[in-house]
Length: 355
Image (cartoon, rainbow, N blue to C red; front, side, top):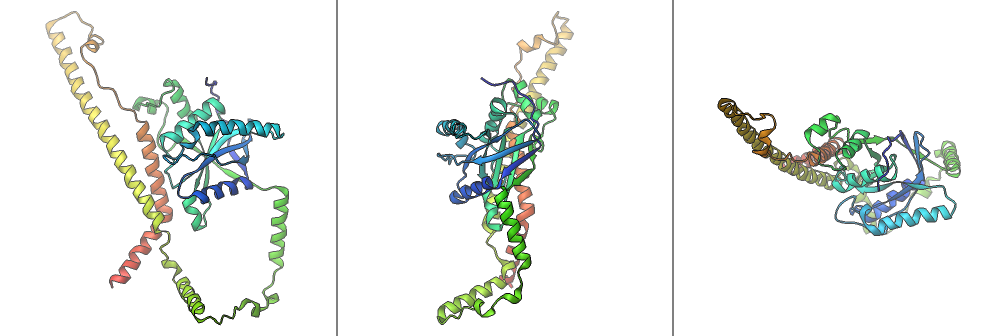
């Protein structure tokens, strides 16, 4: 039984640093398989949502990202986990879940439907943490917090809890692929002990002097000629670091996913164009019937009687188009930000070999 929906009021998510480390470790261990897990914290109906604990789901759903949340054993795990936390004296509650992904691949039915259920049935401030594990090897921590917009949830509820959105529903609720998800800023919070350690480490670095180093201790005298040659080779390769193509695999993966999304978009567009053609044909028949009824002078209701004679085609849902458009936009953003340089290096190296 769903609860009465109340508008979310969270504006910022504060997450403990230990939670971030757990998410990164879990995603890195199973990469490239997507993983997920529940987030526990405290929602005080203020502008800041606190996330203090994260645990991996015991069962991984490898079929689609976001599927793990639906597995009954995982849902039971969340219930048992919150009960055990209460017994242990921790004032925590289920506030959402995290999942790993590659670029915008998390934008699918499973993820959005799960987030809808969490915000309607559990807590309007429920959030989704998305961690792009593919960026970690580049030294980039990609962790983002999302929730569905208030207009999207209301459109879903007003439509009889159905995601079969027509054009009219999208227009009336001012929904598009850029605003149906709301991204919240994340603040990483450290415990007092960790903050003290970091401040102490910063002071030691500031007091550190290069003159205090014994340079001889930095030289590893190696008598093994083969190992020395290998080290020289590694040094030579480091000098060509700007031409390193190690990130090309990630770029290729994103491009392939972008192509698949474009194919899905074209398929959905063809279905919608077919609906429009069918609608035009039927409406033309309706107009002909109305004109003939006027000429014959029949006592008919021109506005309603035609509905029993002609059946208009059902408008296909624009929900798929909404998700596909958002994923295409996300893939293009990642290509623009991180993959252009990889493609440029590829053509540069190829040009060098050709010459």
